Amino acid sequence: MIAFLRGTLIQVMTDAIIVETGGLGYEVQIHGRMATQLPATGGQVMIHTYLQVMESEFKLYGFANRGELELFKLLLGVSGIGARAAMNLLGKLAGEHLCSAIISGDEKVLLTVPGIGKKTAQRLIFELKDKIAKYQGTETIAGESTGSAEEILQAMESLGYGRSEIYPLLMEMQSQGELSERVEDNIKKILKRQARLMKK
Image 1 (spheres, rainbow, N blue to C red):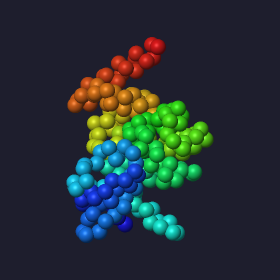
Image 2: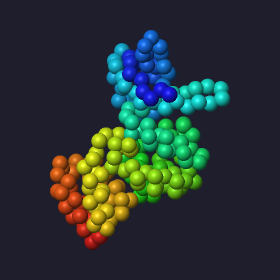
Image 3: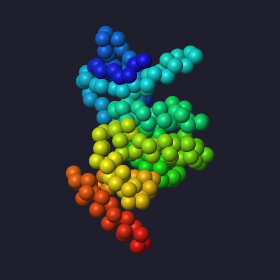
Image 4: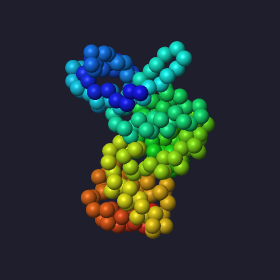
């Protein structure tokens, strides 16, 4: 199948782009956040793709990194979630925030996504919580290499903490720029943060 496209960005539409590679123009469906990350038309792009085969047509869905593609495929595995709903989720929420919402069972965040109702949000949490927990902190979901995050999670597990408990906190600290290069220092910071939360 078509794993990725590398070529020239020819046209950007509301929810799709056209990429020329090898003399062929491919129409690729994209989500809203990705549209803001694209270069100007005429620029070079590298798009990870998922080919959906239907009775009447084939559709290519494009993602900025492998992590988003893997998360898209996990979303498609949830009953009642089609490609459009999966793209809406990725378009509204960055991968780490979507994973954090699912693992922590935060329905309110999921309900901010167009087309996602309460029952669908509950299904996402129920069906994906454990699956995403297996990938969190790794390249598969985050889209970037975060080996240190995986080390932190493993270390916290050895101290008796659950991944679903630590991951949202880890992602919050990462987004706020509180994490350093040293895993040991980050573990100390998380333990201090946990201690403060316990006192509240």
